[in-house]
Length: 497
Image (cartoon, rainbow, N blue to C red; front, side, top):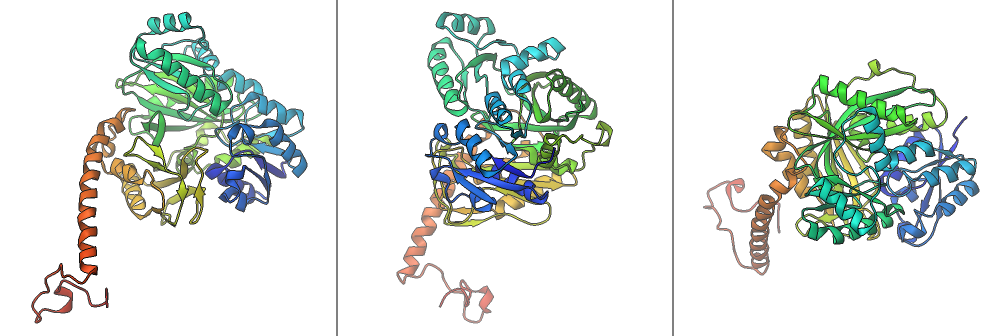
């Protein structure tokens, strides 16, 4: 079967990423947009674009009937779900199939088997892959939930059974917090994924979060493309990802990859997916979940393997075989990704919607900017805050770190607040450079960063006052003696009249 036109059932940078992959392969692209996204970059880039309703995701990007109707009306023969929204919704995959559309992702059965995290945990347990202690079914009923929580022990984690991206997750440290956290997790899961089912899991204190990228074709071949470390997170959402992990050696990589491939194969998985693990300080790993979709951080794997994952997704969906074996996959150098979000990291990571009045993205050798933003674009308040993913590659990890530090210093966004200051602090931190990472990394360093930011604000206020004082005609700089050359004086003659 041949794919000639793809409807991209998503928005933002991932929609842009898929459109670019389609264009490189001569495949036409169809964008959809809510009223809030009429001027979004993916709409401007696609070959065709169609409105699908109000800003609310439930009335637009989560409306299966609208998406299928647009796909058919536009003449698309395939649908790419991106990540988030309906990417891990088995009902959406089935609706596409029923309409004669190719779903660029796993079959509905695999999504149900692995996209539902409790079902995935049961598969891992049956295969003998260690799992984090917790429930293997969604929890319901006040007394049953309380009893399950007591059996697991506190602290524990409430997690959405479907979806990902840190949504529908709450840490509960005592029984008194359980009821309110449960209500919040269910509400957030229902809003983000259309299903409020949750389960309980023991909360591991400061593990490393390591995931394995897998590819599987319709002919039954399953391979992995190495691991990514995603330990640096805020609110259970990743901020910085890298490949390979500084903690994983060749032997551990083989064990993780073998476990990931076994889980995918047991579920009849097809297309790109990611198997996630938590790893303790002794190197023991525990299956966490499988994301039955393309990951936000897929770019770091592409940089170290040279494999275009979206291209592979489209090829596999069209029925083509992988065409290469596990032995052909080689990791070269190191890649790091920083997520640039429209948020204020110093005000509880509050979203920062608004108009981008100035934008200068980083560039240069081995620097990649996957973005859905442009100068003049208004960031809406209705969706995820991700603006761009800054990805760099280096011949080794120290080189990649230095390149990322340089790239972050270049990246300028004016008009809204972003996570760039925190990202710059992370990559310059001694513990990050030493590879001493865990899911608690950011909590450890943020207080010191907030203090330095407050000092910087004070200096900025002083500088602003001095500048205004000088603008009003007062002198704030004492000139050097007239015998000194111009470059030695307090002013440069070309800088002001």
